[in-house]
Image (cartoon, one colour):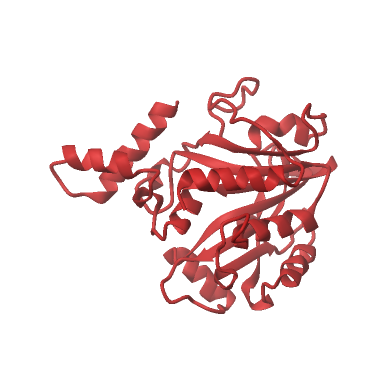
Length: 287
């Protein structure tokens, strides 16, 4: 499946479920002096996640262009990019965990409307709970009802399963979906085996549902938001690598032409350096 087809299917799937399609906002934020670039799909929507009414309703979907500089030292590995596209759907107080998780699963596995991925290669993480919020048993129950075995549902801490745009703003626990990239398939994994597979990049994160119901200020949760929101994120680059059976997006149609051009000009065969050049040129052009 081409990257264009992935984008089209994503927008069509959520449009059919009542979401208004938004264009990608500018990479240079128009009304947010706190950040240099747009770093996440939800960033242009922060006022609406905090309770303002959006002119196009309470269910939205977009594919947002993003730039992040925090991962610059990791560029050149299999999964980091300074420029990337984030597919996202949002509920601004409309639906919550049941619909968000069900639709995530359906889009990932449906052959007619979605990506048609093998559900037997999916693994899921949920928030294990801390002083800010309780253990997210509800998400785990929904995943189990959809057919994900309990042996493939793992509870992790805030470092892995809590998301916020920074020290201040809307935030909350999340549930993340991982896909088995190995040829033979790993099967059921104990928690430590799953964490090791993550480190080896045998399984990679392909989708994230954030349940934004808390407000953070100066790094601390200070209370709940006016409404329960859903912020979904799925990277076009990672999804494309999965769909084209590649280890990294640098081998997909997203990078194919630029990697070929770098090969034409390169005097040495250093793949990491070629990837860095490709990433930085792509980012510079979009900026």
